[in-house]
Image (tube, rainbow, N blue to C red):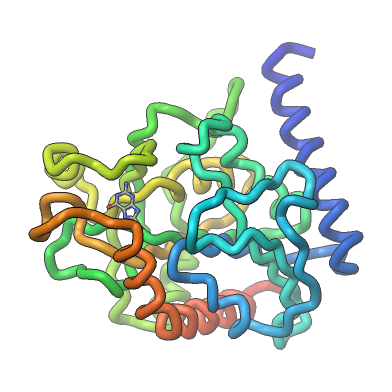
Length: 277
Ligand code: 8IG
């Protein structure tokens, strides 16, 4: 075995262990859909179906709690009205935690090992579009990975042409035709950008700026998941509005938008679930 093969073998065994643990603790052998709930999106879990089990993330192999206010720290199993099950990843590892890009991939890899075919990745983010202020939900149509890293290792040439599946965006648009679409740029964080960096990202084509979803999407595509990404704008990116950035404002914007976007997400899950056999 080469070192690359050994690394990827380790990653998939870790995910398989986590998935087996989740199956045992929830009593559900297959979760068809995975949802990663970012800042502002936490209430959605309660709207999409019946909670079957909640497992503290710290107990699931390879997961930890990020310590970020606004992130749940639980992994739950939800039964949808169709009888399918959704795995809610309320604990994501951010790249800025310093555990490496591979640690970021563990959530979606575990979801794939648990049987998921579709990953809904949500986040809170900054906006470089003046009309998209705090509270705006935006479908991610493409990304710029500005972390200079990949969650994949070895000769794993994953195609990202349709990373944010057009098919799933079409389904989301059936729920809300007015949902705007934008390009998401991921910076490493944990610091927010300077105004010059935001202008650079804007010039490169970024509408949204965050610290999570690009690497997760790459990892998800790497294990064959179809991805829908949805951002909640919680702030104008640095320099795009007067004043400075403060995490408490981010949380407040999430709280304010929570009921509305959770309802939206629940409807999108229901629509996507109808297409899963
Ligand atoms: I919430 O303005 C949230 N996350 N990089 N920039 C970056 N991440 C964010 C921002 C932002 N807002």
